[in-house]
Amino acid sequence: MKQTYTGLLIISLIISVIASELDPLLQTKHCMNSAAVKALGDATIANPDDILCGLHNPALVYGYFSQKKTSKLSIVSGYSRDSLFDKHVIPFGIAYGNGEGAIGGFYRGLVTESGMQQHEAVINLSGMLAAPLTDETGLEAMGQVDFGVNIRYIGYNWKSRMLVPPDTTLKPISNASIYQKRLLFDIGLFQRDVSPNLDFALTLRNVFGFVWQVENPVIKDTVVITGINAADTLRDTLSGYLYHDAKSKGWIKNEYRALTIGIVYHVNENSQSWQLHLPVDFEILGMFNKKVKNQYIFRGGLEATIRDNFSVRFGYSRAPGPIQSGWKEIKKMNVFTGGAGLSINPFTLDFFLSDEAFGTTLRFDL
Image 1 (cartoon, rainbow, N blue to C red):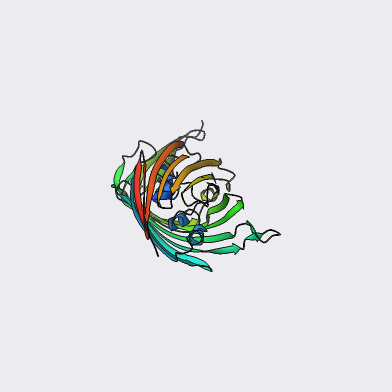
Image 2 (image 1 turned 90 degrees about the vertical axis):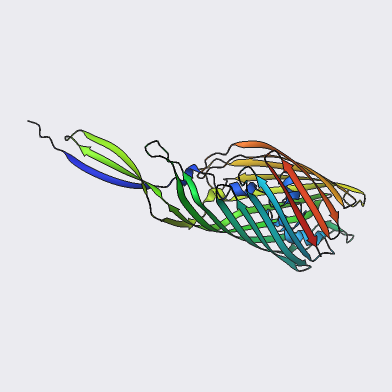
């Protein structure tokens, strides 16, 4: 007679469900820093309209002061709302620059009606990396090369977070919480006049960084294996919430590192009556992780300036829609923006508008 037996084996697994939510690092990159930048579809890494452009390309803080030769101090503040951060987005920046370099400090607060918050503090250091090149006659053939570094500290929290399990064995709850702290580094280059009327820039975002995270609760999956006989077993999974602080930390993942190349073409650049500027940015996301498909993002804009006092801007971007944590591929959206700016020395007021967002910034230069 064949011998039968019964047995029980229980295996417990703890599963985080943060992967089903919006990515707090990549998603917030597309929220407003500067209204002038946003009106151009975020095509800005070679276009220093204000010091907040330094949040897109660290070299542009010094580049801004090199352009505004009479200014040594700039202060910018703004307000915005969009479809995700529907309560407010508040950027603020202050920077000082001279012929030797520039230093800046920035803050951006992003809050949703549902209580999700992100607070960012940035220290910027930038200056000239290489002097202009001259031709045989002594005239400038290519502009100087500027270099900058951003050191970013980001605090993200969501105290009343809706937690939706990946299956139907558990009901969603609305009292979950998540906290993250991130320390990140960006670098950027900017060069004027790489050829007549053409400027060039390059940035590496999230070159390296470290992340600390605390979640509560997490989902605990208990796998129950029951032995019926030597050949047959029954396997079942029981899920439940585990209410405790699940802590984790580690280096930022390779897929968060992004390379952006940008140019700006100028028309009638030296005119005192009118000028045209055409910025274009091309971003590659995921190129440093071979397991992730590269994502290509296009941004372009048109800026018309009249007598250095009034600007009209239009922008287009083939940009990401909602970005999930743990993304493998990102859905793209066509985003159109527009805006204008008015400058009455020493103040400049800019605004932008799109179908899902609006915002304004006020700048004071001394």
